[in-house]
Image (cartoon, rainbow, N blue to C red; front, side, top):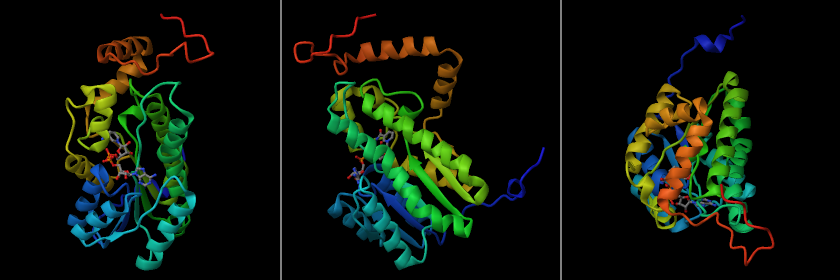
Length: 286
Ligand SMILES: NC(=O)c1ccc[n+]([C@@H]2O[C@H](COP(=O)([O-])OP(=O)(O)OC[C@H]3O[C@@H](n4cnc5c(N)ncnc54)[C@H](O)[C@@H]3O)[C@@H](O)[C@H]2O)c1
């Protein structure tokens, strides 16, 4: 079997001296990442977010640079990479972290499905398009995609979230397969509950099931930095997610039964057709 030369070279990616962009950096996990990268000696941390005042606040606290961007717009993501490169010479690590939630099942509005697709999936595609050329030219670079355990398992209260996070995971895997041999490293961050605004909103819509065991964003950020240094593709701040994945793979039917019980226990009504409002007949209950 032919083994490529790169497989023998173990490069430890150091954070010190690196130029790092974090999207969704104004709050939650992104904000914690910005602080952790700064503490680890990054040369520049670019705090990017659609929330401009929030990005400025975080940047001011870490002597970083705020660059507002709506990651759902390719032009914004391209400009973010171009401006960072013009100011600091290159982008070493791009954390594509911004994400959105939306409650409901098939009946969720087209606007919610589209927003989830644009922010949770296409933003990663735009980021890859924008940074890969320079990373491939240098044969070095790191893309960190914030996905979710929902991208490996599911989210019982949100079909748009579960579906788009699965797509994001598929894209991260694909990037790793396609580009690692050319020097570009990829990690996918897949936490369960993290104590952020997103989780508080999810709790209001889908119940408190993710609050139990929820981690602080700082802890998740520390796991991300450790994974970058070790070059670990799959970042599981909740290690039990690996077991849940094994359960799913080894007995899909049992896993589905378990998830149905969780959903029933949450008393969720999303995903239930209001047949009076829909021309589509309601699904037969199983
Ligand atoms: N909190 C959790 O329990 C949890 C669990 C698994 C995965 N995640 C993922 O972690 C990532 C960060 O979420 P968080 O929990 O820190 O939530 P958060 O709501 O605290 O932060 C999300 C940030 O993304 C920004 N954002 C939203 N849409 C944007 C857009 N179009 N362009 C640019 N920025 C945008 C928001 O302004 C906000 O600052 C998301 O991808 C989320 O799906 C969160």
